[in-house]
Length: 205
DNA sequence: CGGCTGATGATCT
DNA sequence: GATCATCAGCCGG
Image (cartoon, rainbow, N blue to C red; front, side):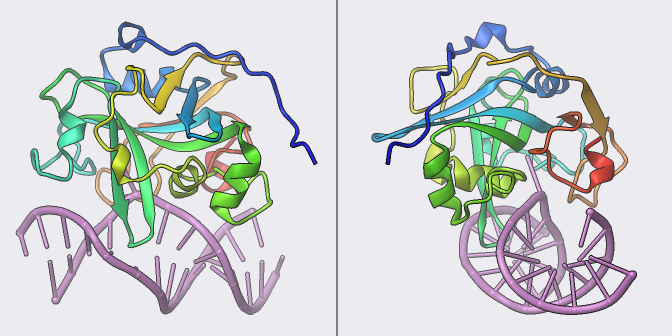
């Protein structure tokens, strides 16, 4: 039977609309749309949780300088940095500074909008709330792999950032999840109460 | 719900 | 060889 569809009006964000500062970008991205155009379907979702990784931050992949893996973090703001971790998961970051400065925003939570039935296949689950809650799940649902590393999310391409479909609610701030270095820094941002925000309940309210 | 554990492989020391 | 920006599955409350 026909899958349910929702009309979604999204315009691509131009780089000039992105704040030139990674923490501001991490806040700005809450409520905006992430889109992955596949040949057969458009996958999209509303960004509801982010974390900033900045210069001088020992938890950042760029802390020890540019390497083959992290080079995308040093691209101008709005480029994808995709890496593989724990032998299982891809993570999607968005570079957040001028070219040459290694900073980025990790996307940790997405509220699915379009292509939900495909996301369910990618994730091997029918559960809506578990589809894209958490960075690894988000990448799997959106079919993000290393082949997208370095892509300009503000250019015309398959993976891009779009305008908000509805305004962001109240934004919560907390410590980042799953790190040991610089664990006290308040660099995690999320839409309060949104069910697609990851982490324990205490970090979702 | 929260806490724990094993899986799994790229990356850098 | 250690580390790792995680997750699914299992258990107890």
